[in-house]
Amino acid sequence: MPDTPKEAGRTVVLGERELAIGFRLIGLKDVIEVTPENAVGEFQRVMSAGATYNLVIASQSIRRRLSDPQRANADASLSPLVVFVPTPTGEFEVESINALAKRVLGVTLAASS
Image 1 (tube, one colour):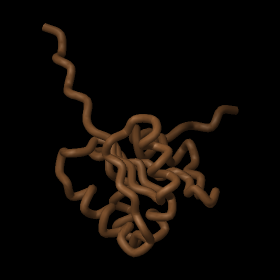
Image 2 (cartoon, rainbow, N blue to C red):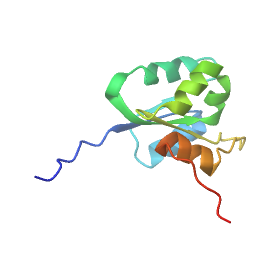
Image 3 (spheres, rainbow, N blue to C red):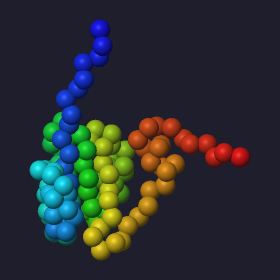
Image 4 (cartoon, one colour):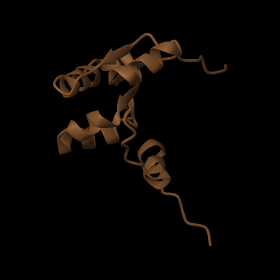
């Protein structure tokens, strides 16, 4: 008997007004505008929402505001998977392909000779 497909999970976006507008324009419904004052609280609320969301897309500015344990938890989380995107101002930190593969797939990419 073939595997029954699982219902697709929901995606939520947390970010500045400009980021939120962009994701709303492409049709996402669960978009939360955050300010520097409420960003960490909203992020924690989403992360503690149980199985509500499968994917959390958050502004890189939120990542910078998280404590080290919160950041480590977000980086290690697979359910929901957390992806940080560049801020509208263009400031960003790049996660290497090796780090992303290790975090998401649990594998280490070998360098080819």
